[in-house]
Image 1 (cartoon, helix red, strand yellow):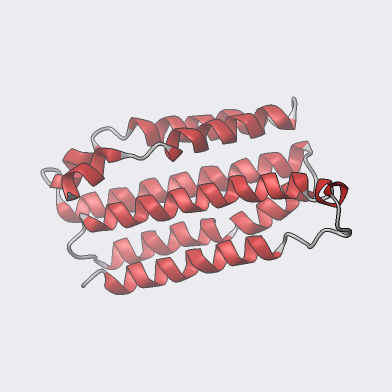
Image 2 (cartoon, rainbow, N blue to C red):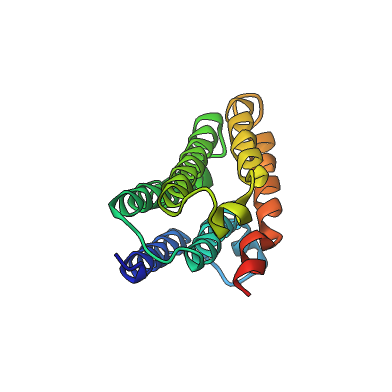
Length: 189
């Protein structure tokens, strides 16, 4: 199977997710700087989630540059990833309303499942391409991905100590991925 429909569907879903998230930001009541203060926290959580979704989109884009064909297993693995990404707006909205232990831990749980789903999708692609593929060589041990998953897992119980510690870890992981991952990009160019 060709990969174009998978990419188009994924792009569409991700665009819709970002749209849903931004629609949760309400117009401030008032025309002064104080009015913006009322949405400051929601905007920060939205920005964090936007960055996470954008990171997944960027990496998905780069990853599929090295995937010539897909099979049913890859299609289902991609759908699994999109399912977990589709929960990001809900977790974002809840944590944006309540920076408390449970919403912050649930947000981390959604991030964990997105990372697990990404790993499953990568594995499905690598299985389809074989261990000697250029993609397998580019990904290597995927240390960055594994460390991100560990960061999310550490942040979840820390949300019950202090939600802001967990959020700081989520931000740190996002910053690590904000630096472009050249493993695949260098091979595509």
